[in-house]
Image 1 (tube, rainbow, N blue to C red):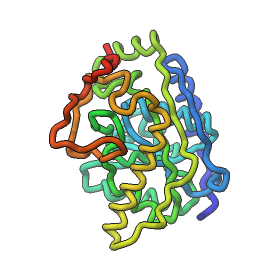
Image 2: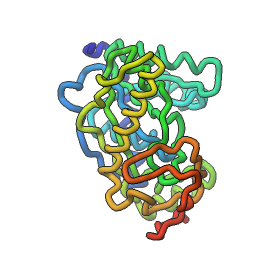
Image 3: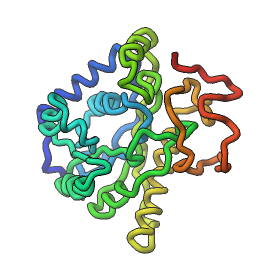
Image 4: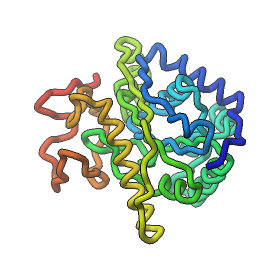
Amino acid sequence: MNRTTWRVPLTWRLMMLIGRLLVLPLCRLRVTGNIPEPLQGRALILAANHISPFDPIVMTAACHIAGIGPRIMATGGLFDAPIAGPAMRAAGHIRVDRGKDTAADALPAAVQALTDGAMVLVYPEGRIGLDPWMWPERGKTGVARMAAMSGAPVLPVAQWGAHAVLPYEAPTHMLRWILRALRHRPVVHVRFGDTPIDLTTVTGTPGAQAMKATRLIMEGIDATLAQLRDGEMEQPRIADPTRPADYTRVRPRPGRELPARPTVKPGESTTSPTRLT
């Protein structure tokens, strides 16, 4: 594993500080876990779940608290925005043009960043997850291929509660959600995993290895998230009524079967979760 030759740009350091200031009035951020000492200052993939449009700001603030500056794989639209675009490029983040011919460029760019010894943060689901119970859905194989091509370890990162700040439909009704967050300041958790995901048992053809490694990565994120969801293993206490459900990418997880149609509808529960209003 390479020692980093990449230095966190001043622009990214300022962005992390701004992110921490932004979350302060909107939520109570709790960051737990640490990057294991043997992995500090080396190439590392941080693989996180994705539950809300507020996640990137939460992770920016959490990285500042944790004292790390990973390069983030982010949607190409951010790089085209008038102010955010130049800042993202100056910060050294990696563009991902989903659904375009240039989408394939993101993988070699991320591998090169890891080869240079940088830390890279990525959302393996490739979108805000639409699991009806808000667990990580089936991931894309990009993270597994990044790990195989670079030799970098994968550390799971879990976040929970950002949907209580900004729900799925944001930026629609943005002012309404911001005012609600300012009034309630919900608790938002970020947890860095204790150990990297063991991918040494993965065998087979390259395609089979990518599929198996992806499953292990998503299981690692799931297990880390479970530590933040005590008492919310089925339905979240705060439901997001703006979130659609996609059952085609639901993953099996401990204690949950995968019926053809769920017996509990999204946003409904015998425990009557609080709904965002």
